[in-house]
Length: 123
Image 1 (cartoon, rainbow, N blue to C red):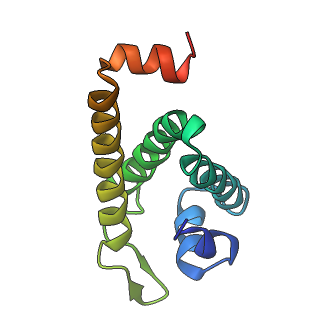
Image 2 (cartoon, helix red, strand yellow; image 1 turned 60 degrees about the vertical axis):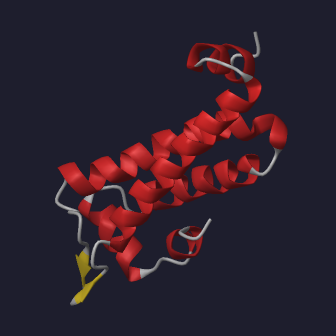
């Protein structure tokens, strides 16, 4: 949820990132909406697992954008630098979501396959 202010508030750094990706403004706003929905559904026990998987996808996209596009690990915009903070936060969040899913599977005594079947596909 921390990044929503920057996406919806048209912060210069967010505008720069999405302009570099060729996705400004629709990508910034669209991703902000997805992130808001995921953040809310992470707080609801019934939707927490599926929201965790969606957040892994969002975070993988963010990490990939930093690693494989001109955005770079350290973002420079208007003479400023984030010193790699956005990349670090994406990686850290990705790791914490994996840890969350691992703990959830152990608590429920599920395999990853069971987790997907029972919690995501509801079979």
